[in-house]
Structure formats: C-alpha cells, structure tokens
Length: 158
Image 1 (tube, rainbow, N blue to C red):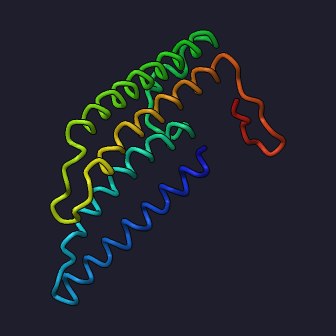
Image 2: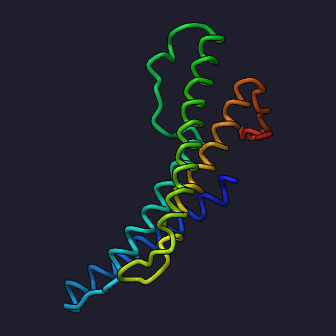
C-alpha cells in the first residue's frame, strides 16, 4: 500500500517542483506568466499534504504525543498507543464524513483558471481521511497482534 502511495506522492512533488520552476522561469525570464500555475500548485499541494499524512502515519514518522513514552510498563504503553491511534481514527472518520458532504455540496464548481471540476480537488479530503482511518485501525490491530519481522527487518502487515 505505502510503496504505491509513496510513488504517487513523489510524482506529485515532482509535478509541483516542475510547475513552480516553470512558473518562475516564465514570470522572471520570459516576462509572461502561466495563468493556471498557482492554482495547479495549490491543488497538487492539497493532495500531497493529505496523502503524505497517510504515508507518514503508516511509517510512524508523524508527530505524536510521546510525552509518556518513558512512563509505565508495557500495558500502559499499549493503552497509550491504542488511545492515540483511536483519536487519529476518529479524526480520519470525521475528515471522511465532512469531506464527502463538502464534495457533494461544492464538487460541481469549476476552478477559475484551470476549469477543472473542484470535485477532483475536494476528493482529496475524504480519500485522505478514509486512508488515515484505515491506517489507524491497522495500527490498533498491531498493538494487539504485533506484526512479524522478516529476515531483512521489514514488518509483515496483516
């Protein structure tokens, strides 16, 4: 799951850099501008932020509340991890729920410069929320049934 998602995020980043570079080149060297570049950069950044958050959550590279990491035994640590992942799950569910409502209400609008349907931009909200909730459920499952570690150090998931 994450390998494919990481490739998508990487290509979005490449598109952001190329589009931003082309925009700067056109504006300051050619003394002209790409009319839709800023809008495109903004929409790609939305997708990258939401999908990047899912990838960071999957690899445990996101910010978390580690204030209590050194306190308590194994049971306390497990309860803390489940609690934090449950809060993340609730956030993902609310993001999905509200994102679907937002897509239904505003998705048929078109972007001013690019003319694309805003549904393609707003869809990042419920998709990112759903994937975040799914990752949180897997992380909660991992607390109770730790994943096996392969010979080269990678975790087997489910």
